Length: 306
Image (cartoon, rainbow, N blue to C red; front, side, top):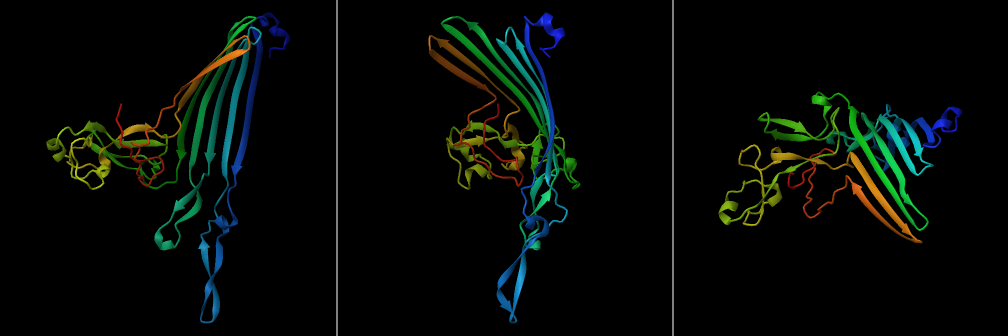
């Protein structure tokens, strides 16, 4: 747009203005013939003098490719002979017929079957700013800023009779209502990747305090608690420490907000760069004791709630 005639009056301020837009559909066909047609193999043994075969891979004749529809729109802006540049983007992606290894009952003889399972939406925006606040013969200061926001939600899951068609997860006690509720796993309309963990209260200061520890503590792994051992909150007050006492800690998936700032200083051929980030946290792996709840995105992690 900056090359159009009607932009001539703004040329001294707006040096670039360009729109971008796209739409696309991609497919994930990471499948084998056996996923949809099944597979058989010779047993290697004879039965009454004849060779037999057995099915070693279940078939799913209704299997489809995983498909992702995406579109985005953006604009590139340049000001003051491109000494200040701003890039804005919005995107929206919907993945449906997700490929998923669906668990099967042991009685089937198979552990899982490749299936299509629900849809997930990712949408958000990204902002990028690049500027040169100072530029002289010997000294230049370049500044770069980035920020992005992403929201990942489960759009649709097969009907299973559960609230929000939730898959997996577990029950925790809700102090607000005084009742138990099911959380975690995958549920329609919810962000995935949540973490629930025991609320860390500190350590037992004396042996007398440790003697009053709940008789069931998954973190103790069967041993008796002593002074100096970790202490966790019994949220529902039943004298036991189990999954119902876990509290929400956050999301293990990539953060919904990320960003960064880069400063580069140049002086007579020598340059110095400093980068700082937003939305990233260090992970203390010594305290990360994960235990699955038979649901992707729901694990236990002893931690301190902030």
